[in-house]
Length: 310
Image 1: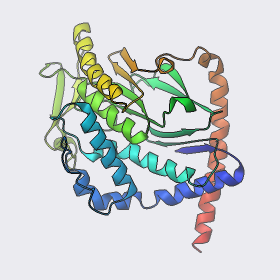
Image 2: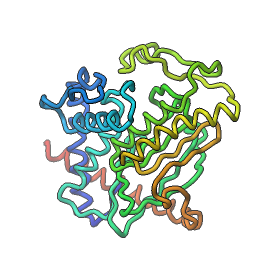
Image 3: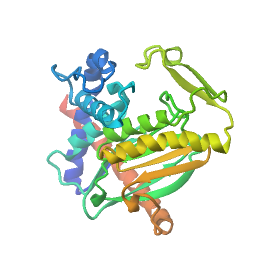
Image 4: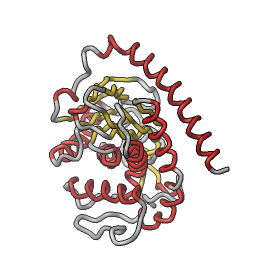
């Protein structure tokens, strides 16, 4: 899903460019899959740095390498696949912004969001601590001065496998690829090794082609004690603070069993804007109107692209 604000000509150009940029992504990534599934090592050689790869693959490699370098843990298992969804979102957003003058634009690739805001715009993020309930625990208003261009969420209850027990970890970062990678690392760190209430299975048993191979991933978590919850969240907080210290993320929201820990160096990203509740209905109506406009524009782009091939 994508959306932009601007005049009609600029919107048409942006949507056209997004459409064209998305056409070869899957094919290009398939060609690079064997390399993109290879683990990154601390200070090791970039496995795709010396070959001709797609822009998305390069974004994936950059995010994975930065995550490994800034994590402070040489034993981590990281492959470029850690940031594939965020990298795709970044790639399409970059195409939308190329040569256009938009007021606002975002690309939502299954929950990993690439975002651009002009100084007069804002973007309200609803942070959820459990993807199954969908309950919003806080809202954060992003503006251009926050320099947040990426949002991602990870956890064992989501679509991707997780080695940790976090219900949801949402990260704000400079790019969607960086947010994607960081959210995965922090979610993996929220764990209680050896805990009997946690059931894990080899990733390859759930997904034979997973880059995690035989590494155990979480499939169930029984009720935890308050002490266990605090201990697991503390593990995640250590990782989040490390990534914050290195400038890889802007904020992280860690959720487990109804408990939430927030980490950020910017006070305005720590708490919900007091005015958000009052403007929530207005924002929802604006989003509905924008969605209808976006649908019309996308249909116009699709028709134009079809006609150009006739």
